[in-house]
Length: 271
Length: 231
Image (cartoon, rainbow over the protein chains, first blue to last red):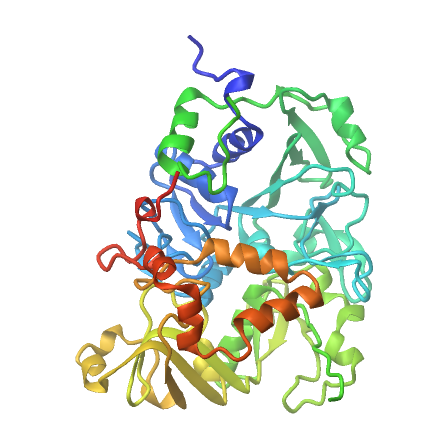
């Protein structure tokens, strides 16, 4: 019997969660936001990365949550932690360069991995005001790698985001607004940038030199052509490796019986 | 009543924390490299500047200033101004009669905000004898003289949670977010849950069964999920 589940045995959220977990390497310091990333990180902790160090923005340093937190402010975050402190410590630690990997979300992304969580439309009279930056640009500025988990729609994968909340590979140099590689702006603080976008259609990565997004793997049930139709910019599909690896039975059992039995973030696949 | 507007100025969380920390240390600004290259630093998006409110008194003359590291050649830096905080309102577990605050668990931005503010109000689950907190000063978070007013307000953080006391009320928050997307929706919510309700009537309205489901186990500091009757 294969260790991989068949298509009717897992849902899209399972696939995204497992893809995200596979971005984590053992012994890494990982900075996590609320939602699906929490399940993904705890899944990695219970499989291939038992020694990862988990940081939550509100002040948890090396947390070992006994059960899934519902937000970064949940009391579960700091249980078993090395230290409970505050936002000043969490962000100082990021700026100091301790963070290997950050997990974040976004409403819009462009071909250079610039992410918007601030507004849709003109900033000065927006069609829709979103949650704002939060810690998104901070984690993304300082982590060696950042992984974004996003819903994939054509209106979200855009030529130009309404507002650059979080810096991608080609960013703006103010006051003029010229486009420059982030390496030129960050100087000594340059450690990397967005390393993957895990969308509901595929996994995308970036060429670190020219900053362009390319398709790495596509999820079962779609094709690179269909994914291109859901991007407003021209997507580089020349480096596609094939289909995204599907969840294993072990991963599904951990997600649904151990980590998120109440389906807080990951619904069970319809039987 | 004349219509009043709230102006929103976008900074990142780390920029805000460093701004609070500068104010808490009595320094005019902090220096950081966060958020370089983003629209947070788009000069067209300086909302307080556009409104002509940057007087250099309570509100800094600039939203930020770029500079180069003069000491170690680490490249471009951003100076962000200290926040002149009028009032800080903290929601904490315990406060002593003289104002000493003890926060359990993550303390967010409480210590910096309390020190930065001109007026600090500590809203606590319980007011405890000052002497009790002073027996273990190493466990205290904020010194007495930084706090100007103390208020006892049990379940004061609801519908958010309080470490060691009660969990986040997820369904309540969900209801709040979905019902308050319009002004009319917010007005209706405020009429039902805010106006003319004191803390006791608010808790009566929530009801004991709901509060018991949120109550943290004192050994675990949260409410274990099986107690909530999860699926």
